[in-house]
Image 1 (tube, helix red, strand yellow):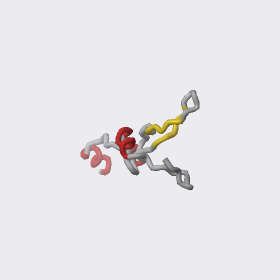
Image 2 (cartoon, helix red, strand yellow):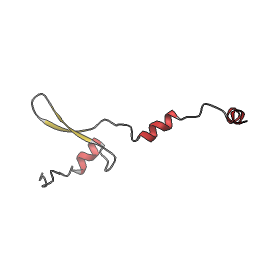
Image 3 (spheres, one colour):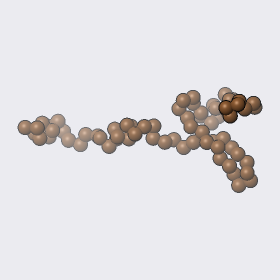
Image 4 (tube, helix red, strand yellow):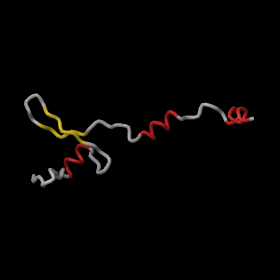
Length: 72
């Protein structure tokens, strides 16, 4: 596999499918084992954005009637 001048390589389609790597969605990492061999691995899934996390925090806990009572 040829490495470009920018240090890039193309991951073959069969490897992407086997690892579940999707373009623009999946992060990968290089992992070294105790024998000094390097492996490509799918990185653990992180929260996609801080806004998705904020959405979970901002769930409504009051009813509409309770909110209306506070505004009166």
